[in-house]
Structure formats: C-alpha cells, structure tokens
Amino acid sequence: MPEFTYVDQPDTLCGELSKHERLGVDTEFMREKTFFAELCLIQISTGASIHCVDPLAGRPMQAFWETFMRPTWILHSGRQDIEVVYQAASYMPESIFDTQVAAGLLGYAPQMGYANLVQELFDVEIPKAHTRADWTRRPLSDDYLHYAAEDVEYLLPACDMLAERLDKQGRLTWAEEDSALLLNPALYDINPELAVARLKGARNLKGDRRAAATRLAAWRETEALRANRPRQWIAKDAVLTELAKAMPATMADLEKIDGLQAGLIRRVGRDILAAITASAADGSSYRPPEAPDEEQKSLLVSMQKQVAECAADLGLAAETLASKRDLSAVIIGGDRESRVLNGWRRELIGEQLLTLL
Image (tube, rainbow, N blue to C red; front, top):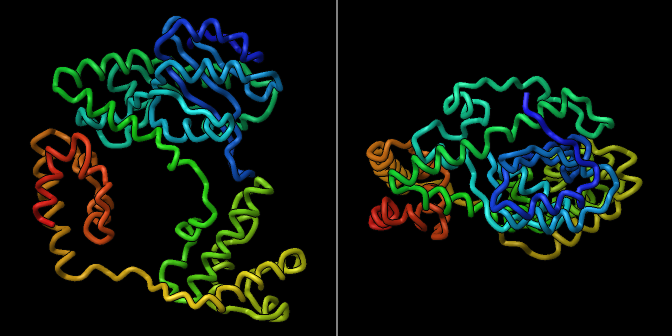
C-alpha cells in the first residue's frame, strides 16, 4: 500500500505543489442525491509523495485552488474529475494529460480502466474494494484513504511510459491534443435551454409539443439546480414527455397525468401550465430530424470502412479514430467541428471523408 498524508488544511499544501510542473490527480465524489457531484476527496501525487486532500473539512481553499491549477494534471479518464472540480471551485487546470486517451492511441482497448492499464504496464493488481464507498462520511477510514491513494500511485510513471512510446511513434502530440479537448468549458457548463436534448421521449415530438417539452425540461433543470437535487427527483422523464404530449390546460387536467404527484401539482402546477400555455401560443414549427435516407446510410458505411482501414494501418481501434456517432453527426448533422475533421485526424482521415461528402 502506498504511503500518503491526509490533508485537512488544503492551503498549507501550496508550497509543496508549487515546486512541481505536473501532478497525478484523481478525485472521489458522490452524486446520487444531488444535482452537482459533491467533491469529497482529492488525491495528488507529486512523484515523491501522495496527498489526500479533504475539501469537506471546512477550511480555506482559495490559495490551494489557485496553486493546484498551475501544474499539468496527469489523469486517467479525467472528464468527471475535471467536471467535479470545475463545479466545486470554478477553476480548471491549465493543462492535462489523460493516460486513458494516451493508451488508446497506442492501440490499447478504448476506454481502458486505470486498474487494467496498471496491470498491463506494471503487472500490478490494484484491488477495487471500495467502489461503492460513501465518501461523504467522516472520519474517512485508513482503508478508504489507502484505496484512494492507490488511484494516483502509478499515474506519473504510467504517463512517462506512455509518453515515451507515443513519442517514438510520432503520436505524442495526438495525445496532447485529445487531452486538451477535455478543457472545453462548454462540456461542463449547464444551460437549461438545452436540457431537452437529454429528455427521453422528446426527440420525436413536433411543433408546440416539442416547444412544451423544451420549456418543461428547462423548468426541471432550473428547479434541480436551485434545489441541488437529481433531475429525476424533481420530475421523471416519462412525466414530462406525457405532459408535453397531452398539453393539459387546467389543474384538473394535470391530475390525469400518470405519475405526476399531487404534491408537485400543488407546488408548481401553475408553473407547468404556464409553460404549456406559452408553448401552445408560440406556433413552433419544429420537426424532428429526418431518419437517414439510403444515400446517407450508404455514405456512413463507406466512411466507416475508410476509418476501419486507416485505424487498422495505425494499429488502433476504429472508434479511437472516429466513432459511428462522430460520422453520423458529420453526415446527418453537418458537423464540421467534429474531431474527425480537425486536428491530427484531419490529415490522416478527415480529408478523405470530406472528399466522400
């Protein structure tokens, strides 16, 4: 088990962190009962030492956040770690290197977990005994802290090994580019007006019913943000889509909606009716996206074939180069900002795909 220090006064760590150009970083968080994930622990490896920083200790953290963001973070599958820190501190690291991204660009399985990567690189097995631990409980047991420390113990050596191999193959800049994509704030910023995109059942609604779904999803998002509770605790997807389909006009109509609880009707029934009434009045002409036609389906097959051939030549999984979703977005949605048409992928495969288009 790795040695570590437990830090309940984060600002006292600034001097140590400022000495290093890079840090291995992982986090523990809980999100089952809240809208925002609750940051519970930050594990940091400097190479010489490991620190388990407690953000729930109630101590000042401003100086820590500012210092912590300056070195390059070495993470594994770091999107959630970046998100939870960004939401907790309103800061992002200045630069990162993601070892999961790097491993994929060396031909390892896409989305390889940290424990599997450590096994592959170092022939060391990391036990996963506390994957369902309650990280909000205090005090944290030594078992929990040792478990957490293990998640950063091998990050820096893994980065060194992967970066060396990538550099020999001329792919180090690929990993740096793909890692940097995770620092786009748009990935983590919350816009209630776009919440309809994650509302199951709303995709195929048309006209004023789609407008109602959009307003209802935005209302739920705002309520969930205000109360810091999961969206489904405010109102389930099936209830919102049923409301949008039925377009109720009165409180009595709301009572007929299956799954819409009486307490919710009493509290916000008039807000729901106002959203639906506004949707009926705005004359939305929205139509769901057309299903791909035969020509588009054929083009997708051709693109997938080219991607698969290129990936095979590079010794990569095809989805590392371009996923089916990437290609569909280019063909059907006209997405010219797709990763497959930009950065290092553009020269390798993007120009060929544009020719097909």
